[in-house]
Image (cartoon, rainbow over all chains, first blue to last red; front, side, top):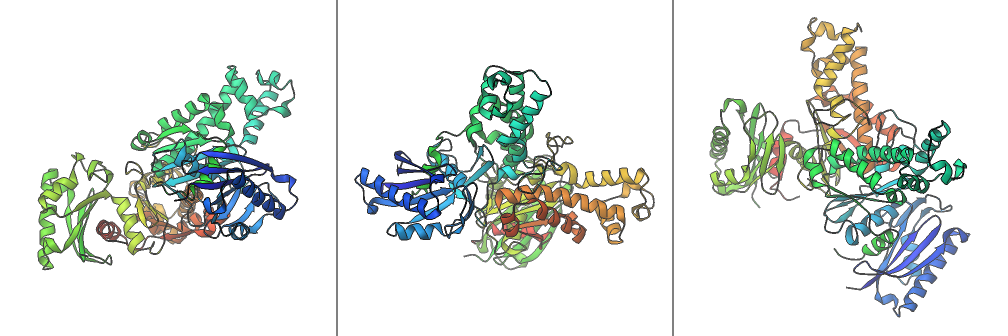
Length: 320
Length: 320
């Protein structure tokens, strides 16, 4: 078995690359500014060049690589390695990324998957999910993403679209979501909505340290600022994370009752809100999920941070 | 490979048994009145005797059987064949059913599973789910149960408790459910709640044919009566099934977004409400689920009726 693979995490801002060994250790990082490349072709050329540079730096050749795994922020047909479209990366419509890169990379195997799937795989194999057979990973940020591991393997569903925890209904009749539906979890706990909700409360006169932290400029409020205020025991900020945690906990109770997983892993920037958020999630699951299933599940924070996607991309080539 | 297995469906009213061949065909049915047996032991003795009688009638011996599969209405630890407890069957607490029956059945392999799981397996292998790799089956009745097939196999989860679609949240803040949680789907579409809801509307003066159908005695209203009225174009009854279908559709949209299944199979007595119910479910999924996932899924009625559980119990011994 080959010892190394290359992981690529193609994001809206940066495209990250790394050499990853079979234990999931990330050895040699590189970073390309995605938006600086005017065309898809220019970005792909830079990725290919960067892979060459990483190999050279580590005195490896293409023959030493098990493969190149690429995570992208969008929907992918995994088997064909076809990218349907990408969120926040213009110009990517129905791109046969696997085929294009295999041609440019001297027929090294290339696999393309959704970025949250690969983060889930990375955490499952090398991070917070080690040893768990069945788990669900969610990422909290601008959107709410998710990935599912069944029996140690990524579960992608019928058309590589599984895992959309953010678009499970929190409310039967709720606010309209970006996706066209109503009451989706993401519509209540996506970054923007949390910020909007707390700004409304501040405007209505609720006293809070957040006002000082942004020097009165409410357009500077972010989830990080709310977390900062919560750590200073600001009541409004703590209330905010409790509300968010409860909402996430309600939806996760449904996921837990449906899938009876061993672990729920929570990642993404918002997970840094820390204990106030996690406690609200755990308390809600404890109140709502069925006894046997809630007894079987551990709700934990993701461990690998930004490396999860890179490690997961490489893990596509590494047997369990 | 052996050609036959015995399927047993242990229910609150009847315990059904059958000889099932490797194509899922049910050959020889028998039925025991569960409640007529005063003790668990008496019922088990009757089951063992009935299996002997079925074999004799078909000129088979124990050696011709691949095994005996038993579905029970409750939570089971599948690997150990341990029944934790049964709904509506008193006296069953932590029963090592697999071990007890294997001893009494001359060491023929016995497997014990939840009844909705086995119905799901039966439909998947021989009924409405044939050919689908990933599917979810739900049963609509007193409770709302569910089972999951992943990659052609039953997915049981970490503690054999997966599939509880009925206890996924329809509403963040909803009515208290039997399970202790709030706003569960079952609390809104379980038989009893549908009947209570429509009785309230009738009492408040809504005109409806249901009143005639039960000759003014509202305690006789059942889902079957509501279906009868709906088939006679009764507006209140049609509205009832549309509301129920919408609620089921909202929760199923979440299941579809999470699992991206190829099929959703709907069974249980209430599925007989027919097109008015199915149309509301499909319309809601069409309005709410994500495009790729809703495009991949077919929502169909269960095909095997009461035989599904028997065929599924036997299918535990039949390779895919």
